[in-house]
Length: 112
Length: 115
Image 1 (tube, rainbow over the protein chains, first blue to last red):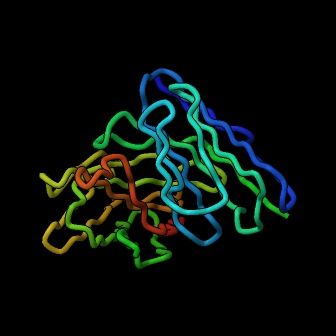
Image 2: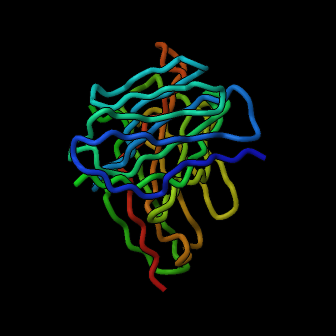
């Protein structure tokens, strides 16, 4: 069966510090991978998606970036965090457009 | 531009009664719709989906209805249980326009089922 791992579970970082969140998927190949953010009182906002190694599409201009160095690995990064980057970050995967999206447990990021 | 809208931020229902969660969308190109449930400090979990070629899909206590002409879908939970208390997200996806892989979510509705 397929599983998705996301770490760390919680993170407290000062403004201006870098960020690296990692996500890996097991039990499938060539998944579509996604990073979503849920800010306080808001819905799930798509940040990045990837349909293959090295292929990244960005949805929202911001100080975040994403990379996919391996087929089942997706990384969310920032060089300098802003206060507004606080929120819940969820990695997700699915096999095709008409299959459900499966989420990891998320990372709660607090920027202080 | 919010393409998927859940206009009720919260809903409170008595245990054993029906819960009806509503969702509206504006993009007529959407052809695949899903409902997710989210508990605090956890990732959203998939509940049920429906393709635009259908108008109803059932899975146990959960039924999703799709009205394409009204661009409206709803999730019915019968009977509601206290463990159903969570935030419910509606989501939609489309094939065309180079956006095959995006799932657009609503802001969610907090369902509280009272014992």
